[in-house]
Image (cartoon, rainbow over all chains, first blue to last red; front, side, top):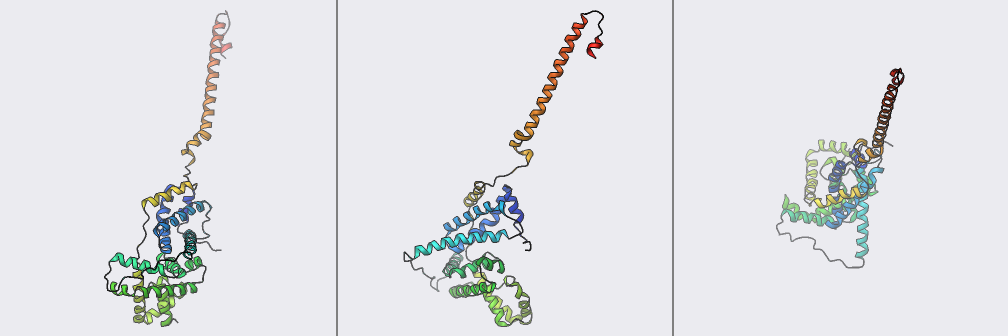
Length: 185
Length: 141
C-alpha cells in the first residue's frame, strides 16, 4: 500500500504528544470544518455544535493511536462527523414517523426583493430539502472541497455514482433557486 | 475524445471549476475547451452561476465558547503536555533529585569522616606531644 501524503500528519503527531499549541492549531483547522459539515448535513446549529464537539473529542482519543501515512486524518475525521450526522438523522426519521411535520414554505414570493441574508437562507433551505444522499454529495464536494475519490470513498459509492448524485442534486437546486439566479446576475 | 454532452454532464455534476472534475477526464475536457471555446465557456459559466449561489449559503462560525470547550475536552481525553525530562518537577524528585540527594549524602559523609579524622589526629598529636621523644611524623604520616 502506498504511503498517503497527509497534510495534517505532523500536527496530529504533535497533538498525540500533548503539545498544547498543536491542539489549538488542530482546533482552528478542523473545528470549523466539522461545524460546517454538521450544519449543512443537519440544518440545526445546536445539533451541529454537538456533533462538531463530539467529532473533535474522538480526534483527541484517536491522535495517540494514529499511524501516519496510512490515511488522511481529514478523511477519517469526516467519516466520524458523517457517522454522527447519520445517527442524528436516523433518530429524526424515527421521530418523524410518530409526528406529522409542519409543512415548510418552499420559498418567498418571486416578486419580493431579497437581501444577501435572505439569499443565504434560501440556498440553505433548498439544500436541506434535497434527498439525503444528494445533499451529502454536494456538501462533501462543494462545501467541504473534498476530492472526488475521497468523497466517493466516504459515501461508499463509485465516482460515477457520486457524479450521478451530484448531477441530480445540482439540477434540483438550480430549479429551486432559479428566481434567485436571475436576481443575482 | 470528449463531446459536448459529456462536457455538459461533467459541469452539471461537478460544477464550473474543472479542478474539481475527475482527474481521469480533465485532460480531454481541456482538449474540448481548447477546440470548442465558446460552447465550453457557456457551459462553465452556467455551472459557475450555481456555484456562486451555493456559496451564498451562510458559513457557521465556531464561537469562542465552543472552541474553549473543545480545547478543554482534549485534556479530559488524556492529552496532557509531556514536558522534556529536565523541566519536569517530578523528574527532579524522582531521578535527578535522588542522584543529587545521594551526592550530597556522600559529600556530607566524606566531610564528616574527614572532620572526625582531623579531630582524632589533633587529639593524637596533643597526646603524643605530652610524651617526650615521640616523633609527630609517626602520628601525622
